Image (cartoon, rainbow, N blue to C red; front, side, top):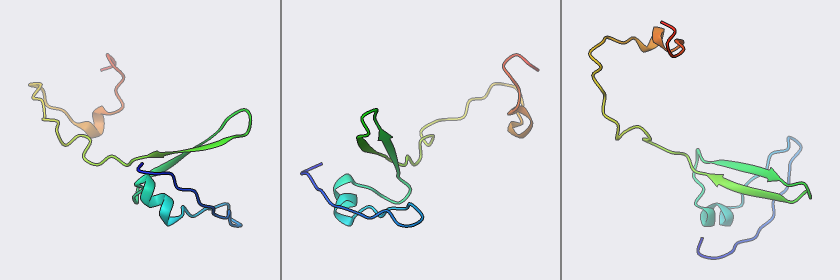
Length: 82
């Protein structure tokens, strides 16, 4: 972050909050990102931005194992349980 930003928001009747625009900009929040909430044993609240990752597997290349696979039926196998 380039500098500190502080703002307030109100918890509504459904316990939702709106992240103020200045905070969103400074934290680099984008649609799809998550906010991780943490309350320590003293009751102090902290918030961490968890960025949405796009294309996490786009750099991977398929591997030819020499055997046909069927992900739809193979996904429930436990290692060694064929």
